Image 1 (cartoon, rainbow, N blue to C red):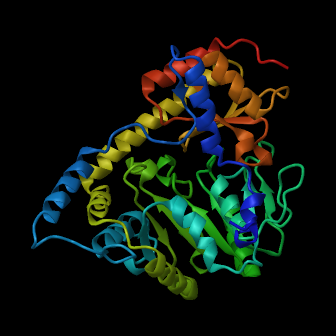
Image 2: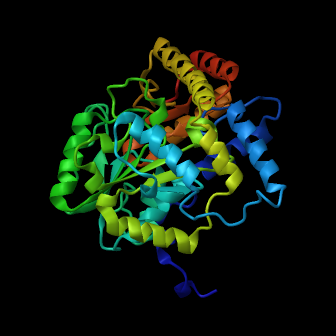
Length: 406
């Protein structure tokens, strides 16, 4: 095929997606050392099974699909009313936030929505992202032509980077005045830290003053244990005029393999809401009925209690990792209101080199910080989504790790 027929922006991306690259390294190590058990604390995939309330709802829905009277074919692209109403009540009305069912769009994953939302905006819009950042925010905009050719440091000239560092408490400063799309993630993937109310108020005020749109990824909001911390951008005055919010059932209810999420676009952003509805009805046939009944069950009293217990188990893993690394003399961040621990490495080793070292010496896999952007160099992400026993074993292996080479 002639290359001029292809989207050349794909050639501006790194050779492979971060987690695909990691998977290949792990596979090579497993082939080299078949006798060793590799403990994977890298990719943020859940390990606990679906809770009973969800399974029961799925069984009932499957039975419905077996009867002509209750069989469902195509459903509404924006989601069945029963699920959107449950989301509006549990996620928003319960916290005195006025979001209605018709402002909620059910989808098969927040990763998809976060990647696809950029289609609604002009290719000339300047994008601002935290650094480090979940790769999809950056990659989807580079694919759309908003990045330009990356420099020697890996940064794209048309992207505005908002550094999130230990020095600033992982709270980004305001982006340049010409930024029109601002991506935020709280609790943050990869750093595991939470944006403060003050930070969010400043960013909302900036967006209102500069006609910018905030794209707020709240996929890990259910891991926030402190009620004083912000779980939804719509807790901030004025946010409904400038912010889109993304939520997922993947990490809160174990739906990584089931696939269900939702995006909120308030009526105050009516033109954008109308465009997203048009986009979804054109390119998406909706989430299947069985999965939506399963998601609805998450909001039942039993579903709430059961999913909270699963989240608590992952956070116990996070505490094991945090405590173990600190006792070994390392500096760590996150892991208190998110299932990620952001491990600060000694200056003498790069994060990808440390990935190879940790895998070879300890048979433990994490995620190199530089895979989340230049600002992630010098850090390493570990996930709390593993098995508790294996998590403790990984921490033990790290404690006995040989000296890190210069």
